[in-house]
Structures are given as structure tokens and as C-alpha cells.
Image (tube, rainbow, N blue to C red; front, side, top):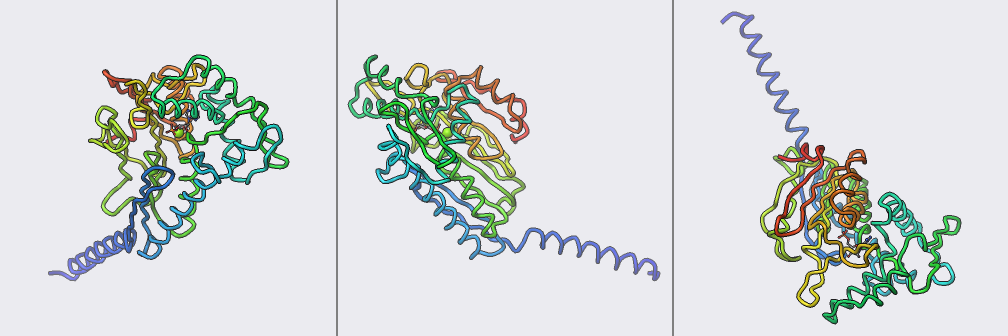
Length: 346
Ligand code: AMP
Ligand code: MG
């Protein structure tokens, strides 16, 4: 072999070794940790990818603790939450709240304006009425519906940014952040994980999901299965996914009456309420929204469930970086999606 040939072989071996070393350096050392716990009245899965297991574990703890903090502020199921304090005290005088709760309320009103009131955090009196109807197994009367509807409307809510206070202009108003708080909490928990050193992660709180950075080892993207409403008939039955999304630094939230509903007089009533009729939204069985943040995805999924396929589709098509996968009610279960949604599918 000539000297020239030897030099070429040595150079080739060096280049190949360099590429292998670089790939190993880029991919590792990474460690993944994952945990599933009950938070915000549902199952929450947190996955953290970090350069060592200790960091990954710390990120998971910090994420869960962030989710719990938001729940303690914004749950209507907790009598001592900040939101419960507002609900019992914001009429006729205002109640001061934390900057966090105030910001979520401001965002909520922005979504109400954007969706012509389809998303409305003052929906509380109707939510309560339907919850009691479920317990009593008796559909509310027209009079009860009319009374509750009089207490609903984001235009009846006064938010004062000067002293971070909240006031109801009608007695008996009730705020309900069930359609947006999970999204907000996920975004804050993702930020916390990033601050604590995670290079990748995913948080799934009851089907509202956001992921960022490096996916688990061996994967190019975060793979997120969307449930098939025909298979997932209640909160515990999951069934096989309808489709799998490939996400990178994005969020997806799914709203649907197929998992959470009240069974009243043998009929299923979705937990999402149409402010215009006062009864449950029924024109879609499942709405998944892909967006940059979990907050946007969460609020828009609830809103589109109320708006229905035509108006909902038009809204999502008009919003940048936002896509929708809609499934019509049974028995058809027809799937429609925005054109941009295709890029997330396998
Ligand atoms: P999601 O599962 O995110 O669609 O949220 C559903 C929850 O949002 C319900 O359980 C209620 O707490 C609340 N909610 C119901 N109807 C509405 C509505 N029209 N606007 C805002 N929140 C709603
Ligand atoms: Mg929602």
C-alpha cells in the first residue's frame, strides 16, 4: 500500500470516529425519568429528559409541585382555593387576588372576546346547575336554566388591573377555570422544568399535553396518541389511539364530552356548556387543538367544542400556528382536520 493510500485510510477512520463521537456527545449522556400521579382531579404524566438522573428527578418533582400550586389557587372543588374565595366574596365588593390568578382571568376574558363568548369563565352557575342535575338524576327546568343563565356572562365580570381585584356585578356569579387552568399550569410546569435543567420533557394532565426539547432516547419527535372517542367511552377506558401526532415544542389539548359527562335520565350530558342554550355542547364529540402553548390549546379546545364544526374550524384556520382535529358525534364519528394538522401526522 502506498503512503498516500495509508493517509487516506487513517483520515477516513478519524472522520468516522469523530462523527460517532459527536453523535454520542449530542445524544448522551441523557437520562429520562417519568412519573404518573393524580393531580387536578385527573391523572398527570410528567417525563423529563436531562443529562443525569438526579436532574431529571428534580424536574419531575418541580413540575408536579407547580401543577399542585396552580390547582390550590384555581380549583372550584377546593373550598380554600383562591377561586373559591372569589366566588363566595366578589359581590358586591371586589376581592383582591394573586397576580397569577389575575393573569389567568385576563387571558380568559381575551379568549371570551376571541370566541364571541363560547369560552366563558363565568359559566360557573350553569356548571353547578348541571352537576346538581347529575346528582339528582333530573334535567334542570327551563326556569332553573334561565335563572342560571342570568348569572353568566364575561361582560358581568369586572377585573381591575390597578389593584388586582375581581368583582361580580350580579349576585350569584361563579367563576370556573376548569377549561383553562390545566393549560396554564402545564405551561408554568414546563418553564420550571427548563429552569431546573431539563433538555426535554412532556407533561400530560388529563389529555392536555405540552412537550419540549429532546424526546426520549431513540425517538425523533414526541409521539402523542389522540384518543378515539368511539373506543374511549369513559374516563378510565382508553382504547387504541385514533391517530398519533409527532410534536416538537408544541402543545395539544383535547376536549370532549365522551369522557366527562353527566348521565341524567339515561342521557349523556357533556361537561362543556354552551352559554347560548345553557345546556351541554353536543355538536362535536372530540376537539383536539395543536398550539404553541398549553394555555392556548386548552382554552381553544373548550371554545371550539361550544362553537361547533363550522365556526370552530373557521376560527382555528384564521389563527397562526394553531391546528384542529375534530370528530363529529356518534354514530358517524367523522374526522375533519385543518390542512396544517397534516404535518404533525405520521
Ligand atoms: P375542558 O376539558 O378543558 O374542555 O374543560 C371543561 C371544563 O371547563 C368543564 O368541566 C367546566 O369546568 C368548564 N367549562 C364548561 N363549559 C365552559 C365554557 N363554555 N367556557 C369555559 N369553561 C367551560
Ligand atoms: Mg380546555
